[in-house]
Length: 166
Image (tube, rainbow, N blue to C red):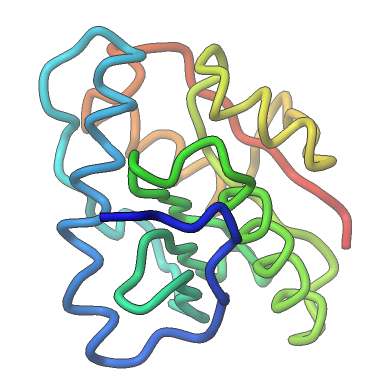
């Protein structure tokens, strides 16, 4: 299959798109597992009172997606995944920009996320997008970090919370 170097169009997810996201996330997680040198990641759950705001997808069928939730009354990037076949083409950055724009349009003043601190395509990538480490998370963001630790994510690698002002 010939793959275009162009970034696929980003749009709000449809019900058909949502059905394909678990397989896309699993493919992207394999890259993360390799970077962490670990077995499969713990199953994701909604650990705190979060509200789903929006799924954005890139391509049809999707080859990348961003899930935006609400935590502490602000936007929270719960997940950003790009299929390994499309890595390194700027798709993650395009999805990130679209997620930030969507949060701004909805009136949020900031966006948070939780990620692995030492994986190049995690915290260093988000820092290059303007995110800053939250040294001591509070409220539901702290509860989210505590739940991640309980799931075993902290045992796989150093985790951090980050925030960007919109």
